[in-house]
Amino acid sequence: MSKKGRQNVINKPLEKEFGVYDASAVFIGAYIVMLLLQFLFYIVLTITKVPTGGEDGFDTTVAYACITVVINELAFLSAPFLYSKIKSRKVYLGSGLAEKVKPVYLALAALVGILTLFAFAPAATLINSGFSALGFTGSTAPSATSIGELIAYICVSALLPAFCEEFLFRGHVARGFSGKGYLFGVLASSALFAVMHGSPIQLVYQFFLGAVCSLLVIFTRSLWTSVIAHFISNLAVLLLDYGLTSAGINYVTPTGASAGIMVGTTVAGIAALVALMYLIYRMVIKERGIEGEVRAVKGANPKAWNMRLALIAEDEEKRAKRREEQAFRASQIQNAATPEVREMLMQRYESEDKKTSKTDTRALIFCFAFPVVIFILNTILGFVE
Image (cartoon, rainbow, N blue to C red; front, side):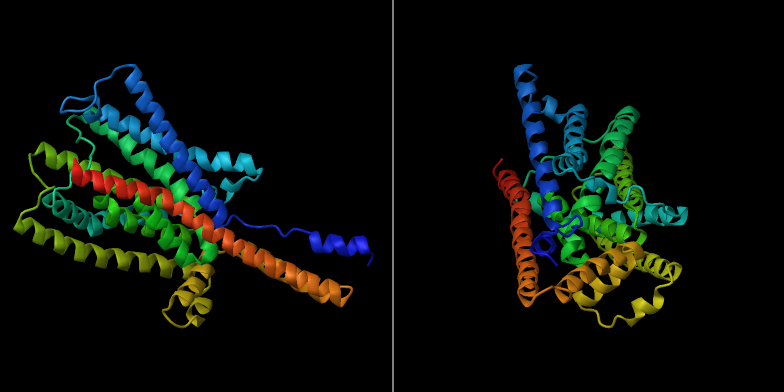
């Protein structure tokens, strides 16, 4: 091999999948765009002198709540496309939108959305009651008081977030974070999803909703199952809120009896949800013929679950690509023309791995820093106001 040929081997870049750094960059971009759009909206309200504040301010109306949601969701939807344009890579193609999924899994995903609500919404209500007793006054969207407002909420606060948030968080953030392990991807993306909502009273419910949706995507390899679960969960919240508010029932401040019912509902809901998710898990591994491979993985530690989730999430093409990349490295080292070239290749790969790890860690820190700071500020303001 000529000197030029050996240099080309050393400098040849390996094709990289959508990873932690990419996912962090997409989220940070979405968050910055969201804040900028919110600031522009505030400027417009100020210039047009639209009255805000107080009981009759525009910020207490359903229209204001809908506009705010649309602003946020547009930021979430646009960020992956902007990143794809900047990087000249169509990163959104791996989001799971194009993956076909059987109707039975969509139906089960809808049931998962309902059970998630029953399992964790009561806990969120009890947490809200506890924070309120401590003097916390977090901002909440007004309840729908007519069928027209309810329909607007269903379109803007149920359907739009279900698609846009799943596209960002499960289609990109969880997918990229899984580069550090699928279990890490589920937990870290769900934590980010929960913190992003900016309120302590939403923390528990949003975290578990995110985790369930992430697992659905891993099991079915399709984003549509998480979109359905998210939509049904949001829809059920709106319908329950409308029905209870119309009936004059105060469910936000539970009494002793209702608190007991909520605890029972949570326990039953979690049990039913776990059973249903396990059923989907068993259906998937049986359908794909990987029961033996999954059963061969022993233990209940994070490493074992990462291996199981990888077997379920990755198709043969993806696994073949990973084996090809590993074989490429091995062959380049083994077939090096001289010991010097072999040493250079080994150092290069080791250096690349360390650099990628450091870059991913820094990206994760920045990724969580923005929403965590906003979350803390919102929590402090909730006790001050």
